[in-house]
Amino acid sequence: MKIDNINYLPRWAVLLLDTMLCTIAFWLSVLIGSGFLHYLNLSQLSMSLGLQYLIVIGVQVLAFLAFQTYTGILRYSTFIDTIKVLLANFTTGASLLFLNLFMDRFYGTHPILNTVLAIYAPMAFVLLYMLRVGIKTLSESMEHNNVSPQVMIYGTQTAGLAIAKMLRASGNNPYRPVGFIANEEEKHGYDLAGLRVRPLNESLFEWMHKRGVKHVIVSPIKMKQINPAKDLQIFIDHNIRILTTPYFTQVENAEEIDMQRIGRIDSIHIEDLLERPQIHINTENVRQVIQNKVVLVSGAAGSIGSELVRQIQQFEPQVTILLEIAESPLHDLALELHSQFPSARFIPVIADVRNRERIEQIFHEMRPDIVYHAAAYKHVPLMESFPNEAIQANVLGTKNMADMSVKYGVQRFVMISTDKAVNPTNIMGASKRIAEIYVQSLFHKLHATDPDCTKFITTRFGNVLGSNGSVIPFFRKQIASGGPLTVTHPDIIRYFMTIPEACCLVMEAGTLGNGGEIFIFDMGQPVKILDLARNMIRLAGYTPEKDIQIVFTGLRPGEKLYEELLNQKETTIPTANDKIMVARVREFEFDTVSPAIDQLIETSRLAKPFTTVRMMKQLVPEYISNNSIYEQLDPQ
Image (cartoon, rainbow, N blue to C red):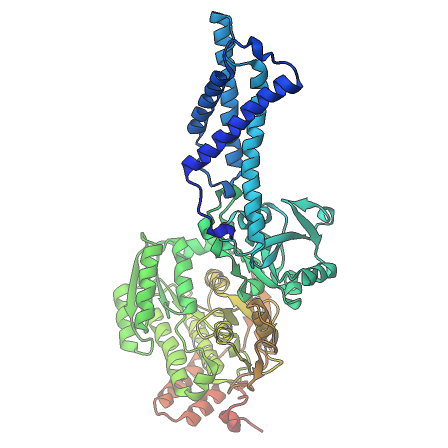
């Protein structure tokens, strides 16, 4: 019978077992004292052994009741349970010794033989301790014979030890720990918690393969000490599934583990491998800009907009206006924010940035001090099919928001742009570049006559991990359905950063800018999408090309193999934050580009895509279509 099928002993049964062991300890003490040590002369007892037994056991049971030694589950006994038993036995021995001293002083006799007492106390503790250790060991041994997969624990510090104890103590043990992995040379070959510590090298993987160990658990604390993208790749390359347990970010003492949460051991996510060290910004500067201000976020329910709203709250704005066209996502966001930030003020507003009259009404009524403009169409293949809609949303929408910001005295306007605006090869990137040109040229025209005008600031960055419609959630769905994973080209690469990281840098860039700048972010090293797909398959516990196939579908319309963060003619200027740079870009005269942009917007209303795209290429000469029907408009 499996140990899992045995019901827990009731408390009275545990108390009865302990009492029986104490009975054995008492009579063994008598036997040892009389038969082996010859310290006892049973014929000269002032009180019968039976009466002495009743006194000893009576006091012992009272001590058990006082320290509740019987309330723990024997198979999950911990150090605390051992301490309880020790205190109960110490109390019993001290009480009986005090009784002997009292009776000797006033009546000249010892009710309990001191020799029996000296042997009984440690013997009883040993038997009680052995009961708990024995049942716990038997339980673990029987559980280890089940089909629970074996797992190595990466890291030998507190969190790693706590994970090992948790796995051993759990009643519904999902994994069986068989050893630790350590980088520290001095720990190799030692045992921790009864498990061998092994070095991270090829011999380890040979041993794991022979033992059939296919899992490794990495604690979140260990994740912070290593470079996940580099240091965990070796496990992925050997088809070892990487697990983590988020619960241990909040556990400091292994004895505090909630056994009901053992199921929170999960596969590590690809985002954890791509995530870079935590970004640090000058929060005081951001606070000075945002605190007690009316902040408006367009596209508030989107991936970037919603995270911006969340991060803004730590700087105590007076009120945050959530401008969004999508009703259900805005409703969900509003409910979440009211729950997460009960003391903050939010005003959800349904509006379309393309509707100039509606936008003006909002600015007139609410008078925002700061605008974060994140509303946009972003999907490259879709916008390649609908260039007129891209102009309406990305250009007209930005123009409406910018014009109203000037008219109603907004202090700062921060526009969210994209790396696809650099040397654009698609409609989406070109439309964002035109929006950049408009806000930058507008600022320079205003600033020439009014130094206190609205500060227009643009931020460019690449793909964000986990954003709506991005490649990682898409791959995850394909893996869940058994594949195949579709990759457009074997050589395609992209830059990635996390949504919180991007929003953090957006807020600081908004405070660093004096107006007219286009800020670019340090996106780290580009990631090959094919490698990303293979790693995601391995992290899910499968083998690429064997369990799940990868299919190449060809570049989509407007897509290029790699994204650029800067035009070839552009240079950068460093800022106070080494993750943020200012791009030197070609500047345009507002009086020249504004009429051309107005004409482009009017043309986009005529539903003539080729005419619209031709005008876009005139505004942005570096816009050269790729894998698109609009290539015929480019010079040969």
